[in-house]
Image 1 (tube, rainbow, N blue to C red):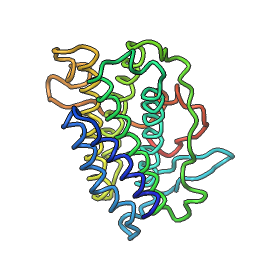
Image 2: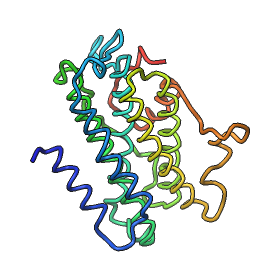
Image 3: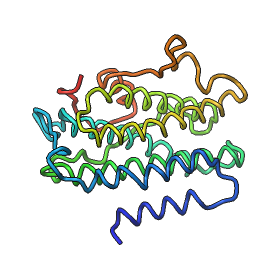
Image 4: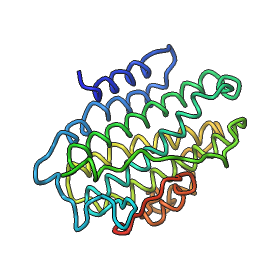
Length: 251
């Protein structure tokens, strides 16, 4: 069994352990893991090799995300690294059990597992699709969460809310940049999971309210969630990312 598949099995075991998982979160993560991403990661035909004018890689001494489909996937990989790192810190806190009740712990653990799945699948997908992954694959990023008070339930959840809302807007905004139908389907599957995450976090912050689909993210006139370009998303995500990279060729 490959290391990649071992990671999937490990995460699946984490999700299915325990007695009171939130089913809609668990199923959404495992369904996404079992379908399009694996196939996309192994697909190396011409349709999945749309590099755009600029492939990801180092330019002028800094890694640039590039353009085209592979640039968009690399952009998504950066965001998934950020979310996975944040939730990894949260579920490994010494005070995790003191800050959150058992149901909240299970929800946050599910979100952690999903984001790790997303991150690892993007890594595999890009490794299989990039012409030269040794130089074109975005490296493991470093993060600074010093602005987050990890002793505060409110600070942790407000950061999670910001990350999840940003992630949904990022995928929604990136859809128009994708030309491959395989990759567009993939993005649609992931954004649906990220939207569930965002709703779950909002419900933890303000239970039994309409905040899970608040009018700050869902346009009341058309019923659509927010969509933002990479140039709008990266400054927000960049407040936590210390590894320097550029996105010169993304809008």
